[in-house]
Length: 285
Image (tube, rainbow, N blue to C red; front, side, top):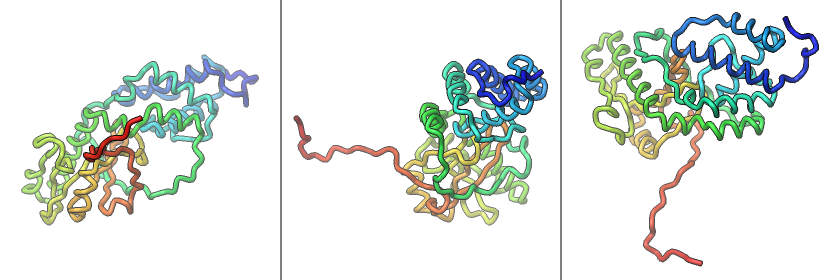
């Protein structure tokens, strides 16, 4: 039963720690394919901390919103809500700092036959960065940078590439182009990185499709890195080159595609530079 004296009051740290831990317990079950009952989790938590069902449900949705900003999957059914109590950022920080393996958690192996036909979705529109993001959330995102984390997680990247290989073979087979389906190649695995794309596939008319796969467990707007080699190839072969952005990979995989010119679909911001020695004398103090 809810404690009426807590109605409308800020959540304490121990209450936030309890609901964050409970949320991640459900998320682990979701990603592992184990059965769990959301209402039973909520009822147990309500009895533990004395908060109302409405308050608990809203806080679950707050957690979903923060995880989306961190490029992490959230629990289906708890749609992200961004009316945050600032202390939730600290609670999530405490939990992730003590359970860092969650950041690179992979779902059970997936193939294209596991997913619905509606796997392809529209790319998100380009929005100006006008939304005011709380400073504490910006620090949290910098600490658990989803772009850098996805980039370093080669296992996740390989899983996404394998997924797209299966997806392309299935797509071509359904178009009665089994001959092309058999020619689909996982270039990154067979020839190594460096080609500027990961998967060689085909359009139904047999024109090559050079697919660069970018995979995240996070939501549709999670940013990603592009290399100079990829950007150059996109400009060199715009008719053939495509990004396949695989998102929500851990829970409900979806894919949108991006065709050159890239600037029409995404903002490109340089973040690293290659340093060369010019041959001129270096200055010294």
